[in-house]
Image 1 (cartoon, rainbow, N blue to C red):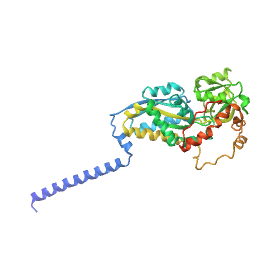
Image 2: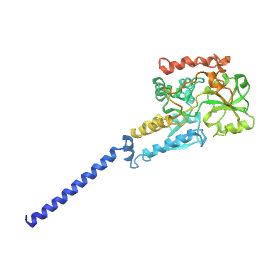
Image 3: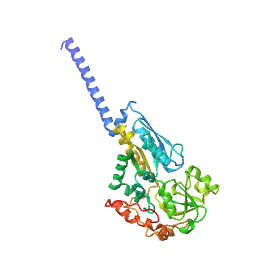
Image 4: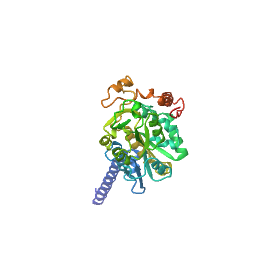
Length: 360
């Protein structure tokens, strides 16, 4: 082999090695990209081209479970979208809450409202039947109903008619009970008592039927109102009793379980549809995960052991007798017993829930 040919051979060998090295490097890059989900790959390729800031508002205190869950959901979304979707959480009524919160969504703001689904009844009365009094024994029963085709259809109707896209309906905040200083054992014990409720017609009608005098009031004013004797107590969820100040002013909790304690998350359809599909997938996945992975969520219906009777549940109460066995005996509560039939229809999807006004 001549010196010229030898030099040419070495040059070709060096070039071949470079090509092989480049191919190996490219293969490794493609393999790493394939490890991520479709949404996460899109997020990794964001490169700062898209950025959306959403304000998330609710009434819950900083130490309550719902607040913690929403912060975790927001953090996971930010990480998975590489900062493209930033959700700023505002607790303790810092921004609009209750009806005003939902209105922000309807008006098309860059906003996520976290409220009880009963506030959706201002737009579609079917949601009042969905969350109605004495409808459920536990949050898992309610979550089961939320997965039905009937409720999915209600959500679609809400989006089509009012531009409200439902991200979740079943964040668990605990069954709602009576919190007072007076021991409540029967409906008669509630007569004349001023009980704070959210300013929602469904809550007001429920407490009226139970025999109390409901007082619609923002929660931010509730603790001081009890201290000053303006109201005699409140109805609220179990999970927040020890974290939002209720236990400091109300020493007794009657385990009425008159309403399922839940919270939904809603966003403007206009805003939702403007978000790239890859990011919508991530947002929906994380809100669904947050609603279903609450540490206080009970066992699913298929594995949960059902209590033998309402009377046995009342007997196990360590604070005060449950009113669930006594409430249907009240003449004003007989209308709510009709909800059992509607609940069966709601679960099966065989019929449409019928609104039954209290006292009829």
